[in-house]
Image (cartoon, rainbow, N blue to C red; front, side, top):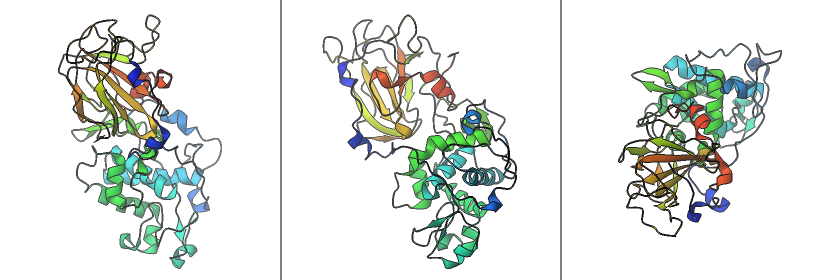
Length: 390
């Protein structure tokens, strides 16, 4: 088991540093769009709350109905949610795995705030159904596609625009495993390549609400399997369990109220994987209670410190921590890692009574104990549950 933390890892991440990070930890874009009548058919009455639906169980993946009543989200208007449904439905019809739907939604969120935008630089577009006027060169539609993507009318047709996006997406090498922002940039060639990642979490919520928890699935042998993202398999949400293994000591239990993570049992040397794509904030030996940095030997209870450990910053301002590695981590500060990349090996360095991974999740860019949240429901909600955690 693990316990006290050394002072070296009690600092919050500086805001100025965060602003430059690839993972983009800006607040989720919150916006409203037009409500062109042809997008609102079938709406009426009290729609279910999207956040509630996003938290439902997973599977089987539900085909999206783009003409019926859709859930409501505080961040988006009815027309925008219907555009999201169209994007997902096109992906389903094309057989694109659900990770692609998350990437597509996050991209359209950044490019157009899920609005079908006309452009004065393309006068013909002003006379076609639209949900606002954009001003990015001659770009049109949900994905702000330029003339090389199709005619004016085609680019202003949401289903066409989504299909063209997916056709290019699936040609990107290893697109299901690479960071969302990298893949989206390969497709879009944007002037702001780091901006897509901040929409990943809300995109996953929309996919879950509209398609039966599909962001919690991982594609295994051509099938979407719920809550099975481990051993390097990546859920559509972009997350995976750091190691396979059973949770022992839990988060802030009655007997250990200052235990700000969970302990996952595993043999010494077991590979530890990045739970999601992100940037390395810390990769070092944590000093113990006597300020010693002797992480190359097994620790013991009450020694103090995390041993060899890594902190990763992810999209949405989440931070994951991996403690008690057996040897120096395989990653370095500022390095960009993909979900599932091996970052170290299980050990027993620092404040530890035996080989295991101490795993923490923090929110709001806060590396201090006050920022820690329970990893068990967090990982379950992303399709990467920690085993035996109930």
